[in-house]
Length: 75
Image 1 (cartoon, rainbow, N blue to C red):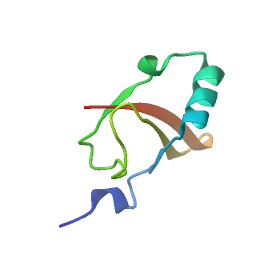
Image 2 (cartoon, rainbow, N blue to C red):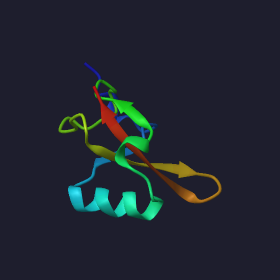
Image 3 (cartoon, rainbow, N blue to C red):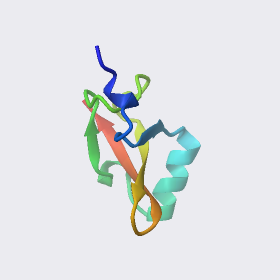
Image 4 (cartoon, rainbow, N blue to C red):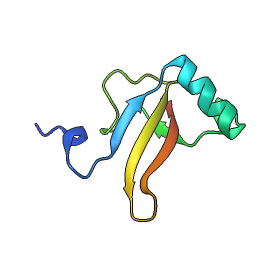
């Protein structure tokens, strides 16, 4: 079986710890529930991601070199 998360076109997905989540929420002045959502079944997610976790996704960007986005894992 092919592991989609290891494909070269899939951006890096990282589960944030509690301290990092708090820093992100403070920086953007949002609540956890205001973050865009990503389903737990998404094949790009790390295996240890659970509903309620915040994922940091780092994509390549033409304008800023790297674009960082955050997603809340839902069921």
